[in-house]
Length: 296
Image (cartoon, rainbow, N blue to C red; front, side, top):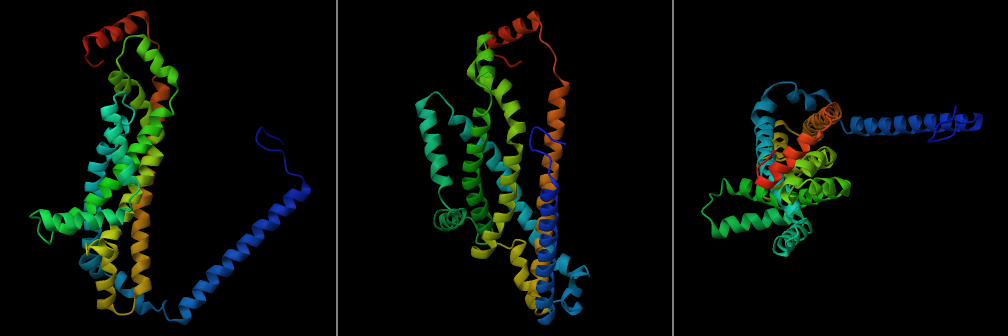
């Protein structure tokens, strides 16, 4: 049976696909077995190396404090970077040169610099020119680097999301008397948010993972940095420690992605179910609101 996307497979194509599938499964099983054999040969799968992660001591002493610091830095960076990125993205669409050019320079500058360099620069800046204590300085530096870089990336996401909308919507809103800021606030942004959600969430996942750079360079006690003292305390269980930490990162990022997918579906359903038809009086009311400068 054919479809608009592809033709139905013939007998030879079906046999070829079955052969490819079986070959891939065999190759994947061989790789898994090779990894298992290599770890077993080095005694990395011995129960004594994994036993600490069954008890609560490893989590309460090492993993939970590191996870708390990771979530703290990531949350602060998200709270600051999201609105800042939105403002910069909208500013890049401004008709005023004195607004558009500085926003463009800021976005392009910080988007081109590696986030690790921004963290190191922030650490030196707080060390030389502020009274921030040495205990709090790594957190400030990590958040500063994450905010500057990710706000610039989010600004481009916002700008691209708004530009992707049909121009006819802006023209129709202008035709009934709405000003540009009202078009952006009432018409364009609500629609663009749904389209931008996947890209925004991907950037939030990057923020969570990039907190590990602060632990590697600035001695910020985040989740990944807890592997070294944990390994030193329990012995040579490096692979076990990093495996557990990797699983924690997977759970956090998967939860964030799942929540965003649920929110996106909910927003799309709400937009589809709210297709009210405006009458002449509704249009006149909106136009009257535009002339008075108040929000609808």
